[in-house]
Length: 455
RNA sequence: GGCGACGUGGCGGAGUGGUUACGCAGCGGACUGCAAAUCCGUGGACACCGGUUCGAAUCCGGUCGUCGCCUCCA
Image 1 (cartoon, rainbow, N blue to C red):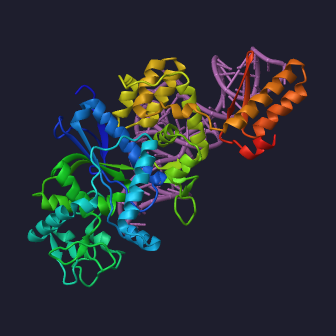
Image 2: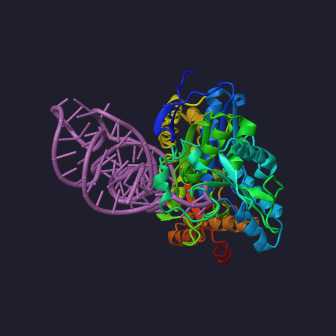
Image 3: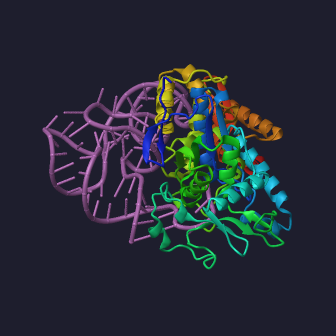
């Protein structure tokens, strides 16, 4: 291949040249959402980061040669709690949340993965994997209906997260202490009570532990080995560590994923995003506040994916402005060739900030065709950014009349009246612009309908 | 306590042994009745202390600071 792709592999902790297992069948698995609530912008980060990687792989290796799997976790205690709280069944919660997720991610312009497997459809594969792990003595059932993976049996346990077993043992959570051989052993299967979702199994009615679904689904769709496994950095331990253990041990010790990619965390206005701080921001919130999908993408991609990202509304507004500026000079079109300098930035461990820098250069040098290609690739060109906030037709007429009144005042040199009208409109969120003989206006994010009605 | 990341101009954010990143904001100018928008121009930086080097923001060591993971989490 002419353009070598380099990616930072969390497993080796170095940037490595990406060599596919099979150039005709590139396989990527990314951990998707647990569907119990609206996707927050922290959920959106991996979606957008790996969307760029997906697009890049398709660009480099041709669309048909790339398979992207992103799972949906629809078995989880948080889901159970939500269903119980709302007095509905679990399926209602998961179906509704999946619908939201799709809508929100589509809004962000993320391509849909080739497969979106759901845990509930793979329980039998999980049970098969658990049985195999038991038969190979990597796992053991207990009398009370649990099955645990025995971490001591897997010598590479801790390699991804750079942890040593004896260090981990200190300060480990005490749970099922009496039935586990080792406090670090993690659950593959756990018993369900009558209220909890459960499946019949050789170990009694129960449900799978969290980690096993990814191992089972990845194996079923992508095979024992594949190229890239991605997710948020917080998943390194224990989730991905456990996936490696389960998959490796049940797949004849074959190496699981070749590359492990992890995106950094996200803060909001300098603070950790958390429900207790009440700064929990969902994608839906942003949509409601009239931010465009491309601007959210731009904002998200203007920081390198491995860096922590501090989400600021000031930056989002800046992104919106930049994209409007660009989109006024380009027309949307099917993606063609990616400008060389942008490709070079992307193949260097997805340097999206550098790519954006290059786009600014293309704009400044009036290379609008190349800018258009880049914007198309990044999902930055969209009519959304060119539309101002919608206002009702009757109010639109009202603004037209006020603008006309102002122009009459200007003609008769009554500038104080003209300025008054302009300021009134501005305070209602309407920006008036005089260019040459023409006067135009547009509604801004600060539109105040009530104020406008009063004018 | 263990492991790890990071500290770049007002803000955001790349780069990385030897020429300006860049964007936004600021400032000056053009345009305008005045603005807005747009265009042109422009100042300003690499946490601190040592070391290596002809030369370090870039490598090495230390100090300070911020943050993350180790528990469900993207």
